[in-house]
Amino acid sequence: MTHLVEDERRKKLRVDFTTNIVLNMDGTEIHMQGNSKDLSLSGVYIYTKDDIPVNRKCGVEITLTGLVEPLKLRINGSTVRKEPTGIAVLFESMDLESYIHLKNIVRYNSSEPDNIY
Image (cartoon, rainbow, N blue to C red; front, side, top):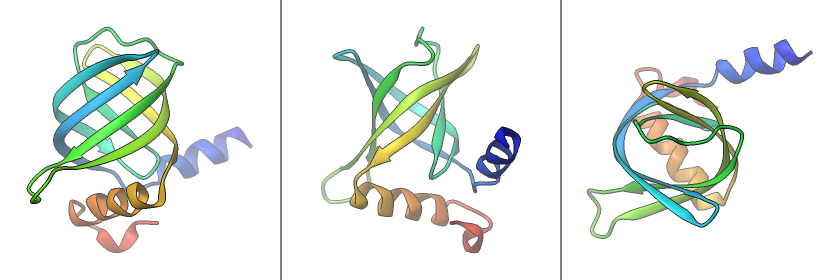
């Protein structure tokens, strides 16, 4: 059964996205700017050389620029995987406004916008 959940999770539409991202862990803010990989409705891979621990709860703040005022998406998640090039964060909860904006980011940056769910 676990394999089905993992397989279903991996089917989520993913996009690459460049923005400012802040991870909040144990009261410490880790600021990152640059590319993310595999941004989806369920998580993100962030390119970073920072030494970020795995299996830790974190807050993720994704800043959207290009608007009159920058918009910040605030998402609760956990670090789930670390590689030499970055860290993967699984999204666990977010408010409705953040969800709608995240869904639009994925839709508008995808070559298959009709496949988002």
